[in-house]
Image (cartoon, rainbow, N blue to C red; front, side, top):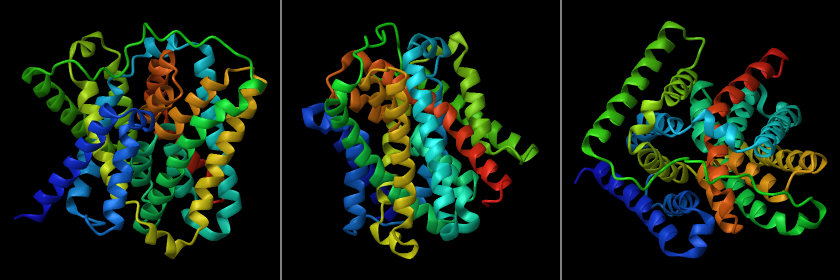
Length: 371
């Protein structure tokens, strides 16, 4: 039997298992399917049950990931983003600023270790901690991050993402008495990432053809203007299309986007290869940890000065570091159903801005001689 077919079967099974666990058990709903899928794939990879590299992974990293970005960004309605409220947007802006500050700090501290690769590493991880691992892959590929650093950074990124989810789930209880209690943003009117509507064959055909059309157009525009990476064209075109009213009548964007995203997490998990940290040492983990720690200090420190609710700060932090799926897990795990729609919307916003932020940071570091 073709080994690639077997691997596809295993990856789809891991995806289905993670989604089933999230649906079946309360503890799994608190953790989130994406993180469970990532951990399951990481265990399988490090036990030798699935390969570390495969053409199947390249397919998922390539067109499947690109389509996931397109479909998820089609759920970004700027009207919804305005409705999450100033407090939520301010919290997310502070969280994103914290990531950029951390990436700059890590670049200065570890420049002597990573040299000319520092801007690529900092830009990729900054994109990850503003929009999630999907953006890490997009920016990492756009910046031509070396295979060695890409694999090691993927492992470090996954470790820190899992740790930070545990931190944001527990930190609000410890800090609650120091922060003002603010009313949660109104999320009843939000309609982010619908995943329960039935998908008609016509909807599926339209979504697949439109998605491939955007991917082809973004690739063609990159060939015309190579200075602008494909992922930037992809993001910009998808966000622009999402603002047309007729796009909201298409059923299945959330379902296809979330399925592709969770399949993507199996490949991210398979790339969590602990031995890959040996050639670059523990510095890459410390690099990522510096970014996340700085992100946390800025988020909760500046958020305190701005008198923002600690639950909202934790949600915005998780939306930045992990994306909409872990933001949903954060709201569920903290028993904050009113924040569920807000967290998903902020996570989608992160998908939209992270690529720009990561690439801009890398260009800035190069300009100031850290490349």
